[in-house]
Picture (cartoon, rainbow, N blue to C red):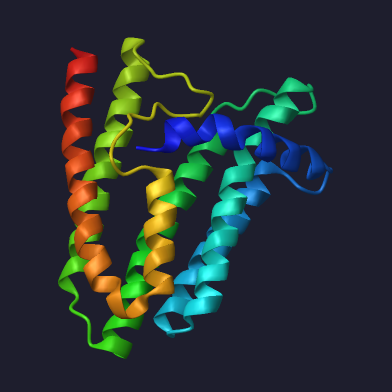
Length: 209
C-alpha cells in the first residue's frame, strides 16, 4: 500500500548506498544471498526466543534486499555488467519467499513456546502468503506473455495491494518487538494479506482481460 509512495523517497538513498558498495567482490547476487542468510538467522533466533538479535537480523536482511536491485541497475547503467536475463530477479524473489515463510515459522515457534500462543494465526498468515505469492507470480508471467506487464524497474510485474513490502517489514518487526502479542498481530496481518490477495486477483483479472 505504501510501496509506491516510499520507493521515490528511498531510491536516492539506496542508490547512494549501492554506489558505495560498488566494488568487484560485492555483487547483487551475493547481496541476495546475504539477505537469505540473515532472514534464516532471524527465523532461527526468533524460534530460540532471542527477540532483539532476531529483529536486528531481520532489519539487516531487509536492507540487503533493498540494495541488490539498485546495485544491479547501477552496473547495467554503467556497462559494468551485462543485461540480466532474469537470473538475478529469480534468485531475489526465491530468497524473499523463503525468508518470509521461515520468519513466520520462527516467530510461531518462539511465541508458542515462550508465551503459549496459538498456532492458528501463523498458519493463516502462511496460507495468505501462499495465495498472495501464487497470484503475484501468475500475473507476472501472464502479463509478460500478453504484453501487459507493469514496468517499474523491477524484474517482475508487481500488482499493488494492501500488503506490500513496507507493510511486511513493519509487521515482522512488530512481532519481534512485541513477541507476547505476536499472535494477535499475526491475526490482523493475515486478514490484510488475504484482503490484498483478493484485490490482486480482481485487479489482475481485469488487467489481463
